[in-house]
Length: 300
Ligand code: CA
Image 1 (cartoon, helix red, strand yellow):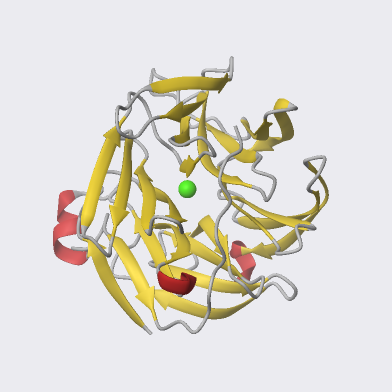
Image 2 (tube, protein in one colour):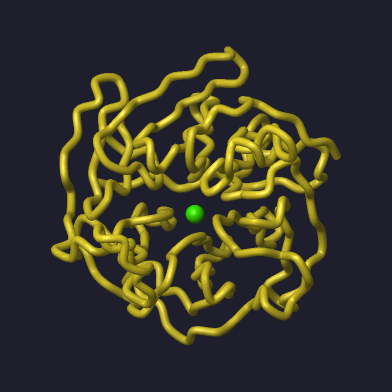
């Protein structure tokens, strides 16, 4: 196994949301606070950035081209060539922002929110986030409330279980999943980072491999851990030369490589320069001996 830097020190703030596009051999990812949607074709060394006003908290291809993004309180579709943006759904509550998002096997988007600090410098608003889904027949629906910091989402291959991370309680949850109806129930704790192992930091983004094992980015802990959801135990771990590891996805030929995003967010220039020269970079892990599966696109 080896870890390499694909794009060094690229992300100004908060790299997130990697998504491999199988048909074109491209990796999409975002720099959330900068509002930048990155498209990288490693085989051609091509790199394109689409900028939007506000945040870009995830970017997932849609069935009619372009990408769906989380854009502050909006879910929007963006044409990557022109940057043209169209709102698909919008929250009235302006004290929250959309964060990570994924699409299920029917092309339904699942994405959650977190409470942003007040503009007057007040404290972080805890428990004011929620989890939503958006699809063309049922529109925007709220499934969970009292969420602190909505993050990673994934499903088992048989689509009967959904996994979900709320980062600040440091827990990974499972739900019984009804794909046709887009319903979740029977919430259980799969893993609790407070008790699972020392120095795990916060669970952030996640992906799932072809063996239905979870790969979870550990924010503040310089690693990605592979967790068996059947036991809740860590079965593999990969370390990175950056503290804030934010998310990961499988990609490349045969989905054998793990692409991993990181952040410079909340790090001083001194911390970056002295201890973490690779902070903010996009990494690739090869030789894991595990493969992923294609990620779902958005059916608009
Ligand atoms: Ca995240």
